[in-house]
Image: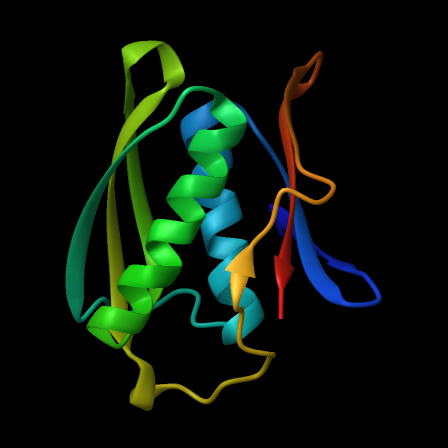
Length: 137
């Protein structure tokens, strides 16, 4: 599994390793929605596109995951497929998120209230990109 769920006393977190920042964001998004209900692989019912711009890669990760959480609520979709295209030196992206209606899957984890900066790590290592994100549940 490209991402791993992390236990924490008040929150739930995930970490992922990837070859590129785009792949890292995709894996973190998969992990976030995998906490809610694993639907991998999924037969996408509908796609939503989001555009996010931030001042740093860390902010871009938090803002993107927060926007996906918002779109999931508004569109009543559980996202399970992601296509990420980055621009502006890694500080902007366009993301297509494919999902299924929430009512069509059985929830298996706690609802996520917010993406936090607590313990946030987004960095390039010798082996590729690493990210860790915690969620308020």
